[in-house]
Image 1 (cartoon, helix red, strand yellow):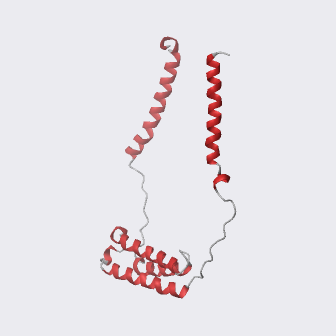
Image 2 (tube, helix red, strand yellow):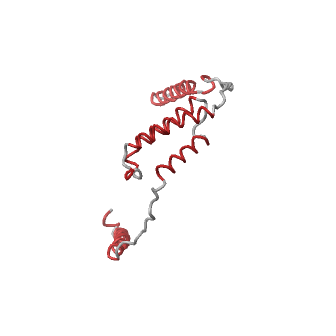
Image 3 (cartoon, helix red, strand yellow):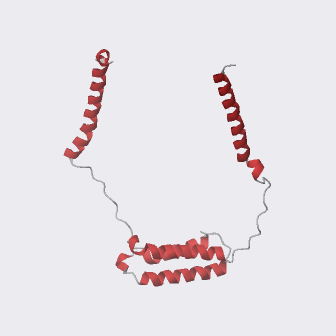
Length: 165
């Protein structure tokens, strides 16, 4: 057997061994228990306490919004941190009283908050206008001329292939 053939054979066997060794460590059945785990017993959602907790979050949000000029209530950049704290509060309180979030109770309260603070924040319809004719013409003609130039270049190069090769 030639020395090069022997080296290739050793490399091939070594590669198979390394591959088998690596795949053994990646096998999911070796390292994980595939038996279903019993779920923890979950306490029932205490909706009356959740209602009270969400009201507390809402009162804090109303107090924080009181510090912001009502003229800026429709501009999210002026109250984004207060709104984030409000939603984080409702989520935390939901989990404390063993309720999922969002749930219909919290959603209805958030809708009431939105109606109170953001009911006058409707956006006007944006009217889309075509660009001026000169701009539109340029935007159409540039790709057309570039396409024609590329086609001409390909044809010219294909005719001159004997010289360029």
